[in-house]
Length: 339
Image 1: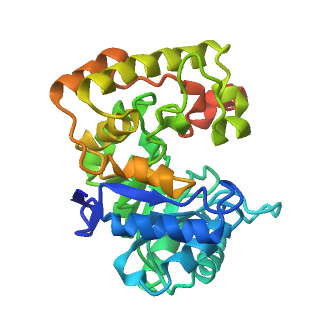
Image 2: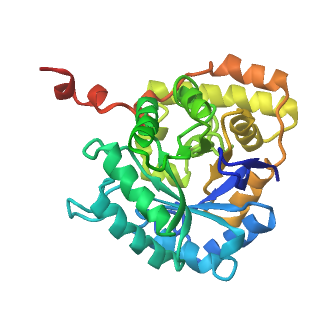
């Protein structure tokens, strides 16, 4: 396992990190299975576990808490808040009111007195940066969080938050968690240059592109992955964008074969090769899935392999731009760009 420094924090983290979104009802993973996954991850050298309050309405946090009991100090434990929890209108976002309340709930579910990294799950356009950063700074000073970061923020909001922290003399985001894979390279255009400029650690999610790069989705085969059952339109190959992705996957599989690698090793080796990326989050549902992903722990892609990937998916290109989560709201809602 390779280790990198998480931004400017001085904390050493593994190049592969364990994402716990599939723990519980989302991935139909039992507590015993989740504990076995955590055991295998820690044994392999992974020292980062990332979850969120909204994964299974808190179920993932509860399962992570039970799985790490007795070895908390060996783990860089991260969670997130901000996505809606239930139907109450104030049980979401990044207001002081909600973050203070929800962090305490996350700590109870995790069975710990602090988390190492607390992340704002999405940019909240209804709450000012000063409000959010002030609350996070106070929570940090209270010892409930060690560091805080953002997740899937547009580049301009990352910059704005850094300036707000400086202007108001508050703690700043030290990490960003964006979506990044060979098939979704848009963050290379704006987000990664900004995170590198400000020295942020970057924990990328969906490096296997929701399973497109797992090896399970190939031409001529029925697509029967867990994710395809939940989001069928994203895997319907009669849709031109999905056909484009499938064509790219077939070409990438050839590159992997020629390099003596699995498609998973190619995909994870690609994202961890970028100098702006600290760790890649893998989200296995089973121990077997994890083991296939751990095979990429020491994968280093050569320049000719990286060049071949660039020929298939050009740098900065998103093959599924409609699946982006950091799109500025005005691009999605016409009323916001019209007087």
